[in-house]
Length: 122
Image (cartoon, helix red, strand yellow):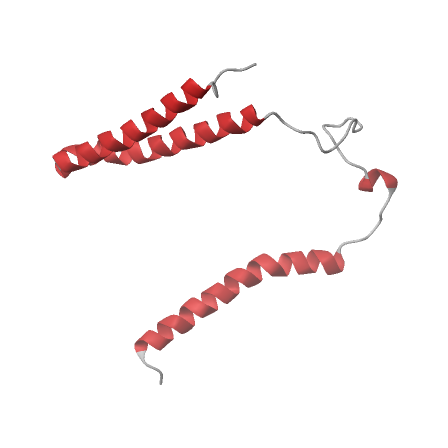
C-alpha cells in the first residue's frame, strides 16, 4: 500500500484527468456525431443579422487602446484598494505609507499621460 501522500497525489491526478475528460469528451462527441451540412449561408460571416460589408481588417486608432490600458490600470488599483481599506487600521502606518506610495505612483502616471495629451481626443 502506497504512503498517504502518494494516495493524495493519485486523487489529484484522477480529479485532473476527470476535469480534462469532461472538457474534451463533449468536443470529441460533437465532432464525431454532429451532422455535417455545409452551405453558403452557414459558411458566410454573420454580423448582427445583416450581411457583412467592408474589410475585416480595420485599423483602430491607438487612443482606444490607451484608454483601455488606463482603465485596466485604475481598475486594478481599485481591486487593490478595496481589501486594503477594510483592514488598514489593523495594518498600521507602514501599510498606509505603502498604499499612499502606490497611489502616488499611479497619480504620477496619470499626470504624465495627461501632460503628453493621451487623454485628449482629436
